[in-house]
Image (tube, rainbow, N blue to C red; front, side):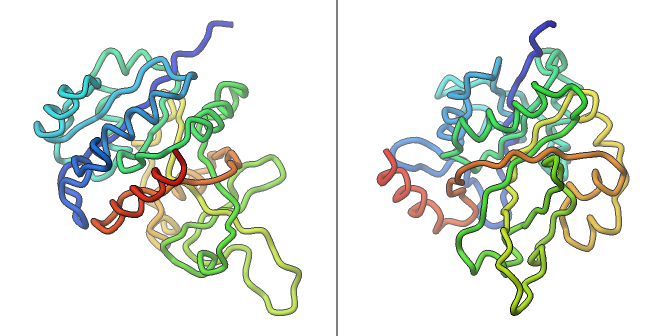
Length: 250
């Protein structure tokens, strides 16, 4: 069987509402985006890594550090739309069999996390979409609506994603295992194009979680269990948190 062509696309939007230009912010001499690109490129399963930018400032910066980038429109509503536009417009991406979406604000993402997600599609042709989850160890995260929880069936397929505690926290019941969903997705090329046509669904709106429309439409999302997660950059204060994490772990 022919080896599938696997690429990573890193959506890179300049005008972040909470931290404009955050991808160009510097952490120990390198930008957030450059660190994300280099961390992603360390995954040996990938045939290519391409940044899907929406701004010439990002394009120029990527050229400066020697990365590969394509310019997409500013009208994309989210990273997945940017992936789809890149897939439709750029020949080197169109040839991919499997595409993994790595968020641009994940400067410390582990190659093992990317490999775990990609392996679910590479090893099982019946799977069309995959993501990752990590066991929650901080009790506060179980109740936090900013931490998305995930429950899976015995085959490792997502049953539901929620900002609420799932399963429910019940006094007197045995402690349950809780898993945090990580924002990394891998798609087969054909399903990524299909994904873009799926309508918005009630649960997606209720939870403000785009991936729920996949489950509501009757498709399956395979979930890789990974050992840990790394800090991402959402607000300016996160720069120091990521800096500290890098200094401790390297």
